[in-house]
Length: 175
Image 1 (tube, helix red, strand yellow):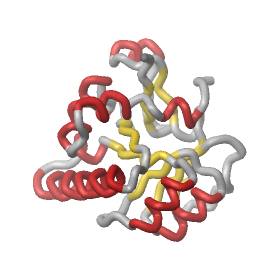
Image 2 (tube, one colour):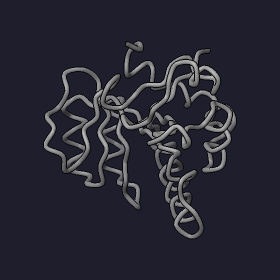
Image 3 (cartoon, rainbow, N blue to C red):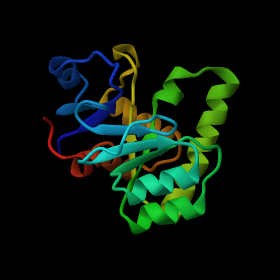
């Protein structure tokens, strides 16, 4: 099974480096796949896109507008938002960058939030995907590192392995 990752547009990776990390392709947010961040004045892209935000109402509107995946930057799991994601078959994208990029108490709080969000999403039968969402080449994770980080926040071995590559189905073939 080919593996895929998603990084932010500012990440300076190349195909050879992505291959060494164990990925067939690394999608670049903003280039390969559209991204709409809460508070930005960007219009909704034509193709599949990722919605990133905190406000449940805004995220719900983006999901209804056709988002393929959503990154929820809240400190609690909004059941109504997760129900909308389940009903519209939108993937909950869990970025591992905050786990690898933070230290101390902030990292522990982030992991606790991700564990509770994952538990609630799985109970509500929302599809989940893990990606590095790295902002630089130094923050990128290999496929096995993403699997281990997913297990660290509460995913089973099977879920962790299957959820690293699920985003290709939603985001289309690499350009």
